Image (cartoon, rainbow, N blue to C red; front, side, top):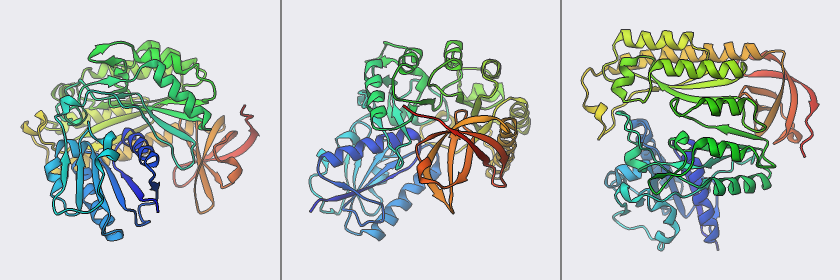
Length: 440
């Protein structure tokens, strides 16, 4: 009888793409992938370490896994596993911990599923994790895939542990990514989301700059069979005019950017060692809106960074309030070991961090609704997804407006032209159908 494996992924889209690739390795080895609750023989937990909460979640997932399948072999991979392997090995029930350079050899390492008294650790120094391993994820509906094209980061932001967990910036070749995109297209997926740790830094191989992200964008725009391509997140200093201008006239790239800001205060940006000032960010947004007035722009922002005074926060709040963006991803700063920020003075009390986070979450809701209101009564193309609840299904327009309609299995993974008619009480946009888009 085939052994069963189940996966649980914490963190970013990049982790999801890598979990899918690890799943394919298990399938090739004869394992059957099952749901988390289906008493698997092996659990693989892919971890994040961006926040303390992600670390705590890992421990809870292990505990729940062993309630379901007490004799299951538990393996931990991902950023947390690279940063704190000994700490993870002490978690009751964990059998193996694999670092960044070892996680894609997981099947080779799992040769005996007998639980041992002590977890085994395979974890090389992060400097040895210097090879790029391509990955892509398929959701249950195969509507979209997250395609990993870049890994690692050469930046030194004072709050971030990612370079310690994933190593130096490195990428696939343009040719390989184009080939993978064509394979994804052949599978029936209609949307690709490009992912990476520092996506705009694409093009480094063996420590040398071989390509630019713009080269990849131009090449992917020619891949037949893919209807939509999104750029998951790109640093403002790497989002060039030529990229924005190209997306504005692209056949496949969507009018949707997610651009990390982190703070609207130049003082805090300096303490964070970000590679731009807020003036550059303002210029990026203005350029996008000039060429694509209906473009959706998402923003990452951190509250409660050491040294952030009330005046600094209000500066950030007012900056974001005035900025023509569509939504915010708000992160409450948490101290991370081995980062410069964790040693800085001016620590912001936890209650103050929570208050500032709440203010920006409210602002984000207002921003999203204001953006949605500008889209009402427009005719847009929607790609519908398979998930549904209480008879309602969802999809997204080209510019990332989330729409809802009555569930119809015929609509799944289909592009439809609809009229955006109203905003529902839960914040989604309601639609009326216009005519079907014929997909060839």
